[in-house]
Length: 161
Image 1 (cartoon, rainbow, N blue to C red):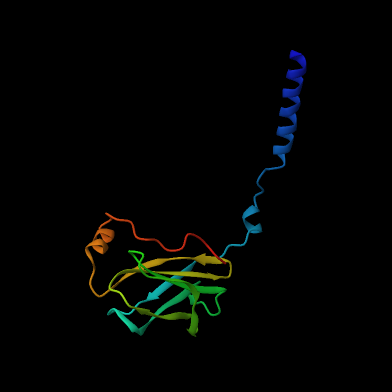
Image 2: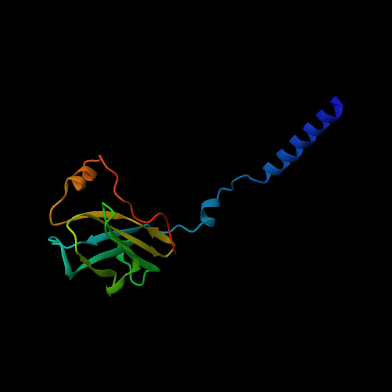
């Protein structure tokens, strides 16, 4: 019985080492993989924002890749939410307002701390940066969130494309 167990172990080691021998890295391995240039985003958020349930503010993002503006990205979506969770605009597609510039318009009916997230993809690269902005005055809870004492009522929980 002991010899049969030893035989099985030795056989297993031979099979494993033979299988692993095919897993060596060749010197030109990196050339077989596509390398995509990273995307970057420049946010355009209005400097002065006041709570108003009728006025629409334009939020924009200019996408860059290889030091050029990205024209016709695979997708560009915006998501906006209030830090305390009382207002949320779900992710929605942006309009390309001029080459490389994507935007949406939204009303901001409540004062406080907000977040905007851009979900974008172009030529195999993807980016999802988030920025915060303030509408009117901050509440005590908003100040706590900014100082790290409270958790914001987050954005999306994942990628939905």
